[in-house]
Length: 319
Image 1 (tube, one colour):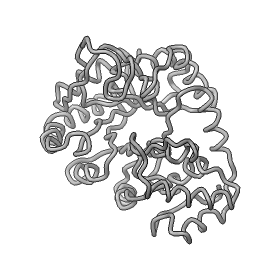
Image 2 (tube, helix red, strand yellow):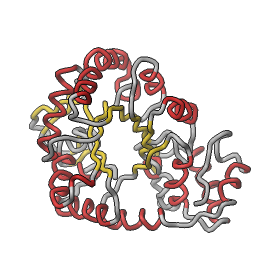
Image 3 (tube, one colour):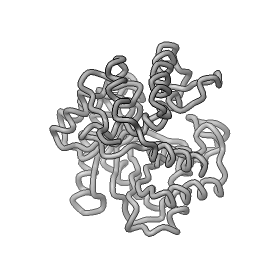
């Protein structure tokens, strides 16, 4: 379960609804939760920690992220996509000291002594533009050393990055060892531009967590809604058309498009899991139903024949 919605992403959620969402996920068998200080500026971590107090922590895998320090602010309203979130402003900091300080604060909000995975958040040009290389160097010379120290000390199990772009993954793999890459929205049923990266990860033994399997909504939203989203913005016409083609083949094989979207990334040997986000118990229930949907074996070759999957992209077998 991706936990950005617990930080009031785009719309407010009550503490009660947040707790109910996590409880529903636990009841459905979800045991991996990903969060970050950026989500609601501490709110998502705080809510997740409170909800997990009722769970057996030894059965739960947690990941959170570093790269932003939360500074107190009096600003309110909608900020960075989060609505009525906690009174902090995120400040980028990938230094050695900044990573350690961020991790300490996350543990306090989560109410735990450690997390299993710790990920450097949002490195690369998509977030930082012309300052991307400066922050990359800050991480390579400082923050990465902090992650390695935490791992050696047994305070985390795995280190990695959580990003939305492909180039920074290759850039970092050229220089450092990573256990995990959380890649959001770049290897989905809609687009497989990250296939060479995933092939590289398979060769290196780097596990990939596929976030954003619905491409910010485009693969799950009602096509007649008039408001289709891609990469947290309005979906371009070319992708809306591509989704229509996917939907047509899904209809031919009686397969819900979201069910195929959840299942597809797992066909690649580098992919450890798929990470959808939930904003309410109903979304958990719906995702469970999609995940349990039987998909005809002929469905995936039909997508290949229609050139809706990249050449060489593996698909699930026996689903």
